[in-house]
Image (cartoon, rainbow, N blue to C red):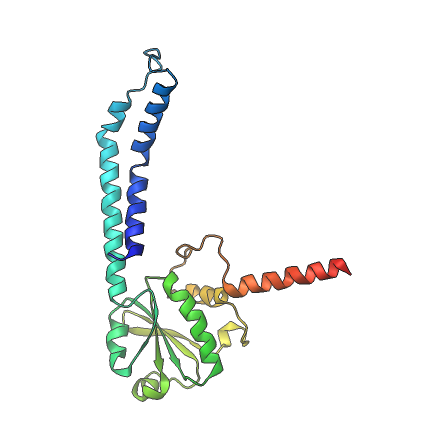
Length: 228
């Protein structure tokens, strides 16, 4: 099991034990404060709570669910999810049919806009494990370029269960400008249903690099204006 999976499992087990740990800590605190002789009406049978079959059942269910989630993530990673990878034309069919959701970027290594798209897709790939992110050199994939009618690059084609159902051509959906943010691309991919419409893994309150940079620029400009 890789370090990330181990940490996730360990964290989950800790959550599953939280009630039992709280009960033990409470009991120790009561004894330390000399309140072990509380009245019968005020006493709490913590030993019984620790041995509660319902609590044990909830813990077991939580552990089982966590193990299942870890196993699912491991299967997806073995299928190439979680990273932005380059494939060959010979691997293309196996890659797009081997996962339920796939994003494939047809690119040219000398095109500046293809490099921009690369940057954003690379940033999103680790955040949406349920979707496979790959790229294919259009110059080395003439058969599929023709078969899929790829005429303008960058061209990002979206697949579900091996079937191409939508695409992004150039930067038409991104304001036709080069300085769009990763979040803008993310939102478009969510609307198209190729990535999950939920918070990104580990990204609560997190800004992408472009948003953070723009915020700093605005803040600096405002400070300069105030000092004039």
